[in-house]
Length: 220
Image: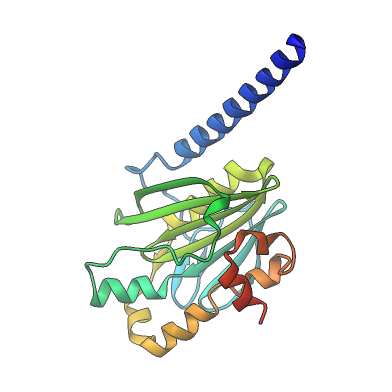
């Protein structure tokens, strides 16, 4: 009996240590706030230019959203139109969480700032949600929103890729402000999560990350 108890205690301590190490490693990915990444941009769109590493492939894109693949992971990059307009017209407002992910699945949260390639500072928050060793990554800044979906084996690298793309990006804020009205923003927010339908099973694992109200809306 004592041996069994010792065994389970060891397993528990190992699991706790592993979780702590993962969180510490993710902290390290996001800790280099004072240095901008010096990569020449190699992708140009109507509203954002950015650097895409050679080990990431573009799955699909439109003028406001890009979907990338990295190994078996998926990354969505959206332009954060509401935040850009808020910065222009309501500069006192902070970036916020839309609240459609289930906080019971939240395993990591970080807030901070980073410098882009032009040395401009951007505030962000970053959440990780876990379900059966599959992870949903949610990164929000004042200009961009990223959603990542990966297995545990790709977690650190996918986090790193999201930060790399964000820091290399230049969003054309003035064009966004000129071309998007309040109605456009409302329509955009309603469709904000739609790219998940292309790369993740709507009736499968991804729905387990969403709060009940949003599950209902997406399945209408």
